[in-house]
Image (cartoon, rainbow, N blue to C red; front, side, top):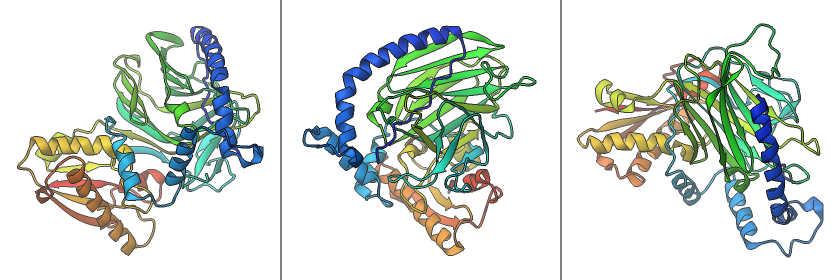
Length: 421
């Protein structure tokens, strides 16, 4: 069955942006025509249902298929993981300290619309043949809002896994994420200009654009940038990351930093909700899947925590499910910890792993110890920290810092601690 080309679609919020969007669509169409032959060749190679000969498939497409096959297994080889990890060597994203919202859709049944979300369209929780876990498949031409319980604060991060796939006709639409502050009385889910203000981020196969607004008026800062990450990674998992520090906003796709804008968010606004938007496609088929959506507050001060307080707790070192394999998006956090250790060569630390309560006690204890050992090995092999300075231990699920009855609580309990010796 043909892989579905995914996208979150740009939801315009000003006349100015609408004008730009028209021009962008013209540009997109021209570029899409230029790549049409390549896209058809790729589709033929991966879709048995087309029943077309694949003899003319470019060799690089075969290499991409081989790479996808290597990534699709339930357990990856150490060499593959190492290569992926190093691919994030320029990634300097570090997640917030306290998890405010976490959604991996594990509590939802396959085929259901997720219980913690609202929409004016449709969607369902699905599984993918090449990636584990539950994924939310966005419906066509709609607004999608997760249920937020509290404001995010001045400093927060948001990250999620995205699979962006083509529609049945090979089109590459845009999608949009809005970070919103406040809510006006009687505001509808699809309000044209929501809340008291916020930031809009549009992403597609060829362009990304950002803009801020307050009191239904645009600010002075906006930006547009050509991007290639999504179209180069069609049908493959992409890590999407945002960092908000007061007015400053940074945005990454995988390891590539797309934006770093110091004054995009208007002064005084505190974000308290997010909104995803998709646009109608020509064949009415979904093209966007997400999972592992994590919002965390606070700006980590790793140096002070470790050297002054003697204890650093991080949720930024992530692992595959029930595995001690470190995910590549952990690179920024590990690099920052390694820098602190390099600059303080006399400091020794104990690395302690923790899990949530899913599974039995003995398995979790073993898993936490293996994860701590993986962190030690990474600090040594990737960043050159002497093993003699690193001890490891694991506590499993025995010392929770949050309630294990919620996704956010479980995410907070899955952590790695560094204790100064």
